[in-house]
Amino acid sequence: MNKPLKSLEAIVAELEGYDPQALQADRVGEFLSQLVNPVTEQETLGIFQALDRTLAQDVISPISVPPHDNSAMDGYAFVGAQLSPSQALHLRVVGTALAGAAWHGTVQAGECVKIMTGAVMPAGLDTVVPQELAEGVGEHIHVAPGRLQAGDNRRHLGEDVKAGHAALRRGERLGPAALGLLASLGIAQVSVLRRLRVAYFSTGNEILSVGEPPREGAVYDSNRYTVFGLLTRLGCEVLDLGVVPDTPAALEAAFLNAAQQADAIITSGGVSVGEADYTKAMMKKLGDVAFWKIAMRPGRPMAVGRIGRSVLFGLPGNPVAVMVTFLAFVRPALLQMMGRTSPAPPLLKARSLEPLRKKPGRTEYQRGTVTLQANGSLAVRTTGNQGSGVLSSMVQANGLIVLHHQQGDVAAGDEVDVMMFDGVI
View 1: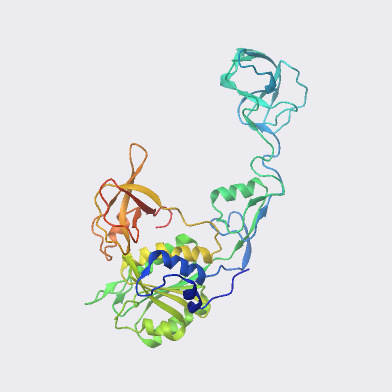
View 2: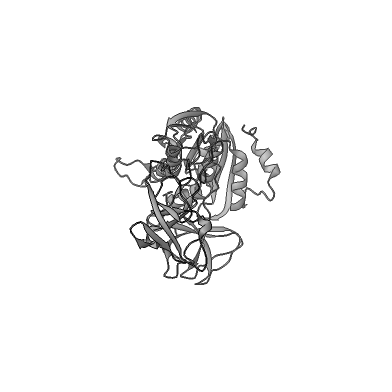
C-alpha cells in the first residue's frame, strides 16, 4: 500500500538542513523519496514480453530446482565414505546413468556408476569423481588419494530454489536471468506493474526541433532526444510533447495535458533565476512546486513538485546539466515510482590519472573515461572541457566522476567515486 502523499511543506519540515537556495546534493534524494509513490496497477504478461518490467508480486516456486539430486560433472558416482586420505580407491563400474533418465539398480561397496552431467544421482550415492580424475581401464577405475572429498560434484535437490519458497520478490526487475529462472520453474506468465508514463517537453522560443530550418539566435533542441533516450532505456512509456513556446497559454495547455496523462512530467529550461519566461510562473500557478539552487556543478537550478497527481521535475536547460541532474536525481526517483526495490547501482572506486581542481561546498559531476588497469584496478581521467553545454563530452565519457560536497582538490593517484553509464546512456 502506498504512503499518503505529503505536501512539499510537510516534506521540508522533516528534512534537516533544508535550504532551497543552497541545497546539498545528498538532500535531493531524501526529498524526492518522500515526494514520489510507486504505481500500483498490474498486468499479466508472458515471459517473452516481461523483460525489464517490475515484478508486482512475489513468485512462489511450484517446484524445487533442481528437482532431484544430480551430477555436476561427467564422471563416476559412488559412496563418498569410502574415500581415504592415504589410499587409492578402486571401483568397478556397474552401470551408466544418463541425463533425463534415472538409473535403477543397486550399488555395493567398491562399485560405481558412470554418470553424465545433470543425470539423477542413483539412490545411496553422494559423490562424483570427474572423468578426468578417474584413472583405469574398462570396467575398473581408481581414485588417487587427496583428489576428492565426500559429497563433491553433487547438486542437491532444491539447492537453487525450493518448492513453496519465493523465487523472485516483488519490486525486482525482470532481467534475462530472471526470465530464465521463471522458465526453469515452468511459469509462463507473470504479474508486473504497468509501465510508468512520463511526459516530456522542452520550453523556450529559441528552441528549434530537428527538421526546422536554422534561424538567427535559435539552437536545435538536443534535450528532447537525450531525455527520450534516458526514459526509454529506463523502460518508461514516453509521452513526447515536443517544444512548447514560452507563452502563458501554450505552457498552461502543455502542463495540463501532461498532468492528465502522465505519472511524471519532465521539462528542460525555464527554471533559472532571472530568466525572462513564464515557465516558473506557470508551475507555481498550476501546482505545488519548489525551486532549488542545488550546490552542484553542472546543473544548479531545478524545480520539483506536483501538478495534480503528476510529479514534476523541472530541469535546467544546458544539455549536460539536463543529463547529470536526470542521472543523479530523477532516475532514482522514477525507479522508485516504477516500484523497484533494488538500490541504485553503487559508486565504484577508481584512481584519478590526473589532478582535479575542486572547491569544498558543492558536489561536482565531472565527465570521465574509466579504464581497467593491468593490476585489475580501475582508473579514470576527465574528458577535458567540462562546460555544461559540451554535449560531445557525454558521448566520449563512460561515467561521471563524483566529487562530494566537502571534498577538495584531488591529486593524481587519489581514489575517487565514479558513477558508470553502462546500460543507462
